Length: 471
Image 1 (cartoon, rainbow, N blue to C red):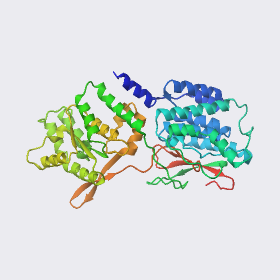
Image 2 (image 1 turned 60 degrees about the horizontal axis):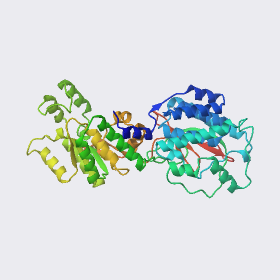
Image 3 (image 1 turned 180 degrees about the horizontal axis):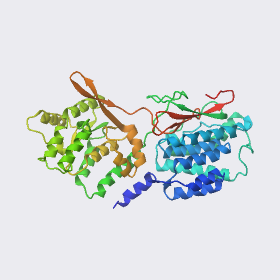
Image 4 (image 1 turned 30 degrees about the vertical axis):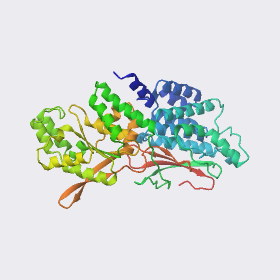
């Protein structure tokens, strides 16, 4: 069983289950904000997370009332809960902004809701319990305001302010507050010198995002989403809890002390993944024919010998040399079974050189080496990355902090490929892109970008202002 501390960590990280609520969709479709408030509160109180369908239904409810601020609050919550937009819901996002354009366009120019760029957007913050709770509360409060309004905003224009400075202050209060941004997003951006602008419509188009994060359509640069220090601590607790589930583990406790003493590292190498690079299918066939588990097979087993014949220590050493050119803080993690090499061989010389550099750690038998290198990378913090092609799907689903782990993986995994060189193939490292593939809001322009699941294109929603043409 999980320890009490482990269960508390799970509760702090994020909801594990997602749900579909036809009640929310029905309430939003019928412009019944009061029922939507009740349903959202019940779902969040139960520790469940809304799905994309519910988020977009709530966004449509606000859009029909020309409530730009309400739409953005819903989308900020969506950006914290969802990594990408399902392809089947691209039309739903387009409908949200079509409805918003029609409702806002029907208002007199002076009565149109202003876009506020006075505080850091929640969507720029990492996914965590505090962020999602704050975003959910913002949506609930916005829905309560809608529920208290007898008519849609398009037919009852809000009272306007006479001075640009007053308008900016009013918009700041109506949008996510500076207090929220300090609690959730960290740094607060400085207010712009110009007053808040009032869009008359929204243009939704497909856009291509370059490897540097540049959106071809909006001409804007997307940014990264990084985890914060306390989230790294939660991931460490979650990994440790997986070992606790298996019972007492003195070796892992020694490893934790080793990481605390020798770290933080900046590059951690998954030695097994690099050593077997290009032979994954062959390794599985060897193990199947041998009828054994790779970690439990005795050293003299035929399957283990055949498997080790596929293991390339020269690739690992090449990866080590590449990593050391990037940083002196390198850790190579290997299962102890790979260290059984003939005395006096070139392989033994490699192991000796790694030991002399103090960068090798051998994990014990009957224990998963992947949890060791994962722990070392996460415990080393924001500046550390892991060199591995392992997609870590098992850990994304088994860790308490699954969604948080997915965000960590995107920002901290270095992939490896083989590049042709004279007479041999040498490894090449591919570091993460400088931006995060998630829904993002540009604070200066109010533009939204949504990555579409399984597609190369993104969806861009840009506000159009008086005197501008929709692109």
